Length: 535
Image (spheres, rainbow, N blue to C red):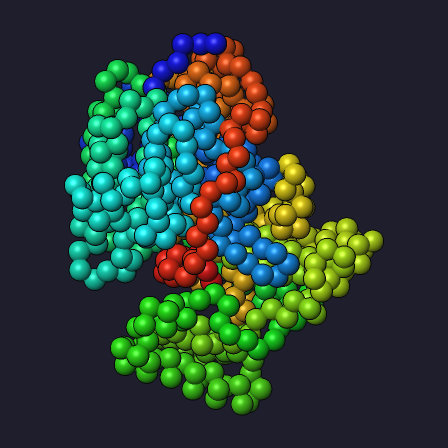
């Protein structure tokens, strides 16, 4: 076995070279530039879909979603959806495995690490998708930190009208402060710190100067964290996906309804955008919001009386030249009010079930609670639907998808059958694929996820064709001097590859599913809705 060394892994959610490359070449981000100057900067290929909830578990485990079982913010049991936590990820994480090998790991703010596992050596501070009041590990750590540094914040206040730079910087500061706090208490081998705000700012802010200032502050915090190491550790800066421009929202369930694959029924709002205000107790306090909702409801009712279904209302407004005005004045309330139609699962052949899976489920007899597709017709139905989806064009006449694939061509592992039956790859990732039942297309310029993030290292890396998010865990394991997972989908990117031992992490990581449970996820779902992940 090789001589082990310390490793620092900095996670920057949602950062791609398309958004920061100009900054790296004009004397901004001095710490990221110094790390890259000493080593290398590469693009890092994400998971499919390139979303936070499946990508970070893949980075921490080195396994694709077909092996760890997470394809979205939610898992499903039949047609019912449950927000994910650590227990939904069926794979050992790097820091859980390293703890069994007597290594000390400090893990700060990584998504889907809650409830925090009790590792033998080190500390875990959960991040994104945890409740704000989540408990840290070991017990009592949160109280000890907050006595010295103030209340630990996982989430910023999205949409703040005050000072968003100060708001986001304050949240990011806690990651740096927690690293310094734990560094004083542990002789660590692995220091892993994640910044979620680097993703949220692109969803929440339009001001490029504000975005840049926040990123510069994060860069300063990155430098402070790297300086904690006494010697010369391997430093890896990795993102779970990139970020870039989108043009459209494609309402795939509306398209499926138009083409005879899906039936609808009347029901409550499916994606929580309106309900979140009631849950926060804000609905009665905002007369203007109530008035807006009333106008939207009245408009829906009036158009419905003349035989126009709610999901056609947006299209009808476009015909008379009012769609743009409505979206400007009532962008959220109107669309939510219009969506009083939901999927009638019992009578549908296919639907997008999960919010961000970029996939379509078939409703199969003997597999799904009210399946309608006979199993001996499954392949024929799926093949025909794939062919139709491949030919979908937007109102400008451009193809919506670069590829539409059966799930087994995208994933491998014991959880392939938990994936959507059909995987969707939007053209150049310029289309959101939404399950809301509205008009089929909505022109919606905004920022959202791209499949290529960044990988910056302070040492040269092996000349591989395309580094992937699965490569981080085996690379760190080899540097720490612990076995590389024999079930990984990744490769060791440093020159330690030939010296690394191999062993199945499932056999050495302990029972990582025995964690405390916290199932009240209302506040977290609200935050996902704030950023547009539940439409």
